[in-house]
Image (cartoon, rainbow, N blue to C red; front, side):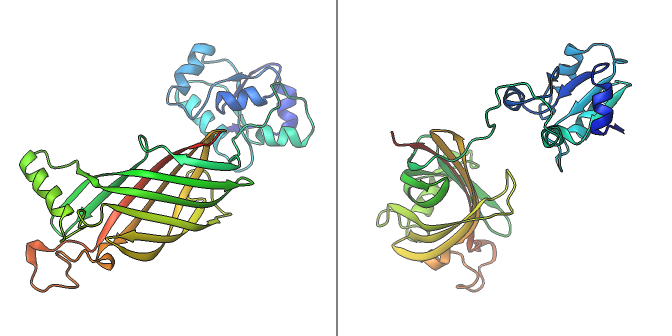
Length: 298
């Protein structure tokens, strides 16, 4: 793969097609003069370039963010594999271009979305908990709805949160036989597991959110510290989470962790508490995957 220095780019940019390979919102914000846009993160990237530049022998120069980002080299590799014969990558990208105070086209606004200050209410229609329960021989998975919740943000930093789970909403997705499905749900709702008649809700209260400074997009950016109350028992709970702004009015979040049900009185099938269970053993830990959406108060 051929790479170009910034000096080589300046010498060749008027004789080649310059392609900005980041998303269109980034292109609209700032791009090198005369560049066209085709996003390398889209699966249609090679066909998009083919629409824009049908000639496979045309000289192309691709660039992206620069730094450690692999966007330009990945774009060059994809285009070479697609049959383009004269592709070069400017790996310094827009970062190096800016460092040299060279001219840019675009709105010059900031791309990326900060997390606005405020109180966010949970969207209970789109927020969901997915659970997986296992034993040595099998597993079941399903969903659990949230009935309420809110998130507090100050100066762009998550401060606290509170979420209530509707234990009556527990559902199983893998058992297609309606009779077996109903039997499992009754079992999960009774005293062997979650005693839903006596404890119809569970609650997580986060009183401290610790930012993770080494995070990258798509990896946890906070550790949430707080307590969870399940079956009337309250225990400390900490877990990593991704919390980000979808736009100026909405937050989204994800978290995955294991919860030891036996700490809350759910003893059925625990190999730690019963002997000779055989096929009746049920893992102590339940896997939870939480997906949250919240809207900022006006």
